[in-house]
Image 1: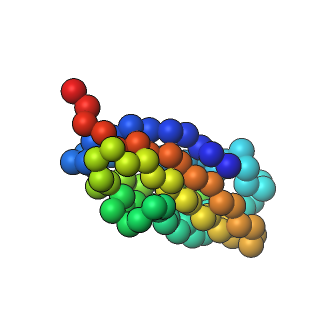
Image 2: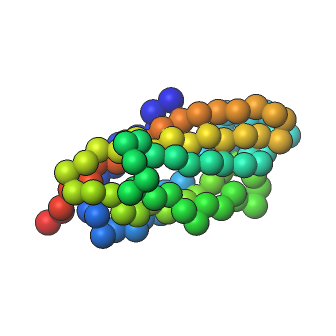
Length: 96
């Protein structure tokens, strides 16, 4: 599922949050999250942290090549064994 579309400059490092609370079963929590990008690995997602209640995840996005659009794929696994794949579009351009 597409979660959103954001514009960033190549030099920015911004924090993002995905809230899975409405998707998870009552006692289920986020247990692991893996990030990948397309078309290449110049756009980076790092610093990922699962919230204390296990219902959301925060991460940072940095890098990217000017005038390039990226798909950031987010593969989330739950304590109940469910797997959810989402993506976010990032457009890298000079802002000003």
